[in-house]
Amino acid sequence: MKRALGVSVYPDHSDVEKDKAYLKKAADCGFTRIFMSMLEVTDGKEAVKKKFQHLIGYAKELGFETILDVVPALFDELEISYDDLSFFHELGADGIRLDAGFDGNKEAKLTFNPFDLAIELNMSNDVAYLDNILTYEANKPFLYGCHNFYPQEGTALPYDFFEKCSVRFKKNGIRTAAFVTSQAGIIGPWDINDGLPTLESHRHLPIEVQAKHFFATGLIDDVIIGNAYASDEELEALGNLNRYQLEFSIEFTEAVNDVEKTIALNEQHFRRGDITDLMARSTEVRKKYKEDENPAHDNEQEFQIGDIVIGNDAFGKYKNELQVVLQPHTDTRKNKIGSVASDEQMLLEFIKPWTKFRLKEK
Image (cartoon, rainbow, N blue to C red; front, side):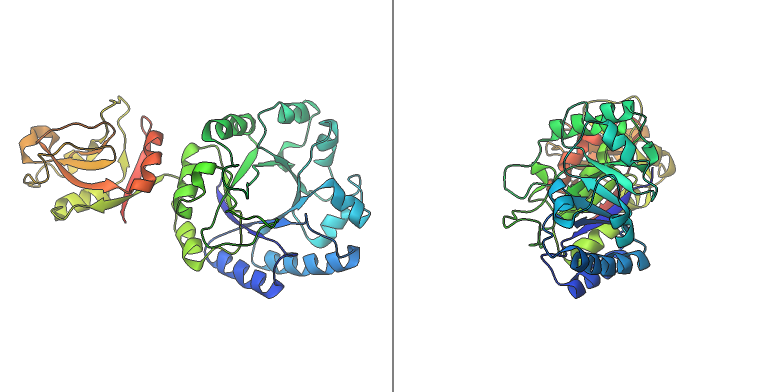
């Protein structure tokens, strides 16, 4: 399944022209999804319709898919029914996210709405909610899953719980999404906004590291920025992200030589299938660079987790093999050429047998 980037906008807490400028910048950076909150709507049906039609119409011109976040109270406020989703179709929306659940049969029926609106479910529960809906023969192409975000510091999901919840959706082939948080955004649905991540461990990380982590899990198809407005630098960083393989930022040592830099940055790396706990070995490069000299440097210290090392001239047939250190060890036949950026070391556990990865200078 293709992977997408998304942004969130909160029309009842923001200026429409600022929203439009934000969407234009995001579109230029390759974003294609919008999470649009309707949780705070109190303007009356016609005013709401006018505001959202205008913004969603502009988003459509930019190529966005828009999912509206709705709650039962909204239906009462606007005097509309779950049995007739024409109001959301008239707004131009591509789907609605159900903040509250029903009996399973109701959700399944909604996926057969005549407007082909996607029905997005809350993924942040480790219960058989999805299984129940699928039992009622839901229209799976129109069924999405999206995690919650958590505005209060300390309240977002721990990773192991997130994983259990996500596996329930991924094993059934459901399109999945989760939220990362901007370190610049201050707009969300509520008056508390300590960031809007799905995972608590992400709350204070650079936004591109959060996204790398979600994509590395293989459990999340779409990564959405929860708060608005992300900075231009954050949007560009996500836009430049490799969504389909791990790409580690490496901080080089001063003594790194040209051959080592070329091996590190210009080659497609993958971990050998017959793995060891000590390091992840990228062995094909040693064949290509077997004739290139590589004198020893930075080879007498204990290598630490996340260090990148390359075999030097003393390493015989293993000269110019690249390794990512997974356990501390010493070996003077290897040169330390740099280290994975400290805030990305959480990604090392996702280098599995045969995992493809690249290195990029930080």
